[in-house]
Length: 252
Image (tube, rainbow, N blue to C red; front, side, top):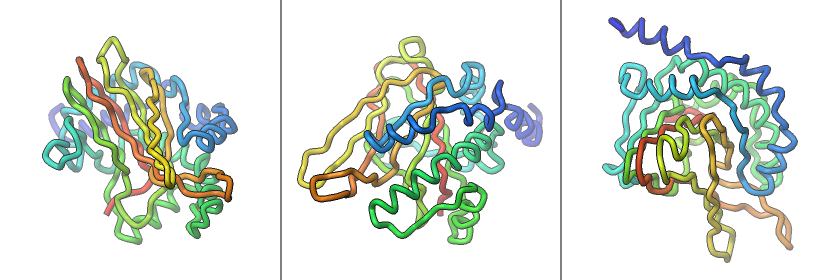
């Protein structure tokens, strides 16, 4: 590629084999909603095909399409690195972000109502992003992560500003046992007056996982209370691991 414009065009041409909006409509959203309520996460298997996973992972060296690179060890985040995509996003990332959000917004609104949080989210993602930008959150948040042997991601929350959508999405682009060993996705939830509970989620290449960003509601003996969620990645033992993170709010 000779110019940034040519590179941008190539990035936009990374599109799924199936129409994303139609594909998302076939997902069992009742199951997704039930799993998010019960455990704070839900998995869609084989959301994107291997060739699309590989095309996205191959973008990592192309600094021109990213707005920022973060080396985790420099900030105490763990080991490994990630890059935030610049706008315009790769076609498949943009389509996933705008097509999945409307299915999650009702869940997010129901969660906030249960937790007595006044914020409500519009059904259209463009309207939510407009709210973010009006509040000064104008920087794109979808990111591409890269792990090598010994790398890991500390438990954390992706908040970024005043406007936070409470559910986010990650897609595993590499194939476990073929491309890497270790590197499991880890969630923890901290309930009041209780020890934190860990959850290790096994994903395959192309699987998408939705999970709580910060709080989620849990029914207790005295009513509904907030559970604090964090997520991370265990140490990679060998190989290389790439994932895409799709965060629905933008950053300050």
